[in-house]
Length: 442
Image 1 (tube, rainbow, N blue to C red):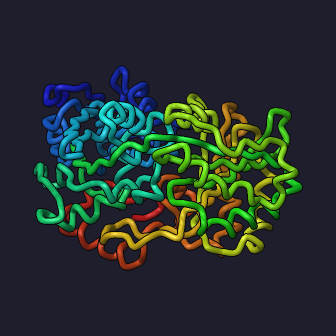
Image 2 (tube, one colour):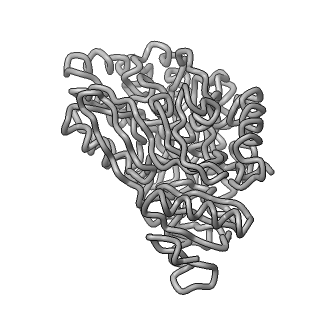
């Protein structure tokens, strides 16, 4: 079977199998799940051959684009693990303001290439995240509050179906498959080999504002962040990060990246930071400083370093801050060592979205990230995000798939209506269940 591929392939027990298996997961805490065959595709022919092999082997197909799925959703027992990270091409048509990207194309690299042509795409916030899984699950990236989840900017996909056919899916051709690809995430039932993307003009000026507070300001900071949310320009991503400072003490970092077109626009967009009622108690107050996209990526990477073990969970909510505070305090009280942290992000109110599988979002996004290196503390750190989110799930309207923890804590990630439609489309395109469904759900 290895002769069928241009790229490498490994059967379970073959030399190199375990290295190939672990390499598909960026999280150092690789799950103990073992596919029968790993295929490292280098072109569409390899993808087609892998789908045919999966039909012969049975046991399902998992797909890895960049490996940044915290839970390693692509890594399952049995069947085929198809690694498409080498399909990383990027073709830019600057005049048409479109691009064609392979699933393995990294978002940060795509942004750098686009910037040379004064173009932009709402790529993910974390360095190294490939576009494949990112776009399928929705895609929360830079200036996402302006352009919407990045899947909204997908105009078509080239996809290998369970029947082993390569098709183009868009609003006119295979519209149900196109609908499902924009939000189904790790439950999508096909292998995307190319994304056809709509591009935007590059923001000409990037700025950030940062304030640091002690936990004694927690109640006032979160209440203010929620109250000011609807007034914050959509070019700004207002976030409150609960982390540990250099002395190991819990601390609140208010940060507000702004991707705009001028220094004057940035100053106006970030002026709301001056309204924080406890600003006089800030340990640090930098209301407006010019930065660049690589600076933003570097800052984010401090919170999500390589070669670490991760466990995450999240929630969407519109609950009042006063109702959320008991849970937030509990998160602070049990916060593991740095760089573990909690993210609060003001997201809504959102404009009306097009018809697509993506269908759950809310005013506020809260996510927990356990980050550590010592395997001896796995049990406590894995439990932390799931337990804290379970305690607050009565205040949640759902979760987003980027930070899902469905294998440990199943939760609502699309609307009930859209989940039923996804099941119906899956039954049409993958009647035998060749592709894995979401973890935590048969």
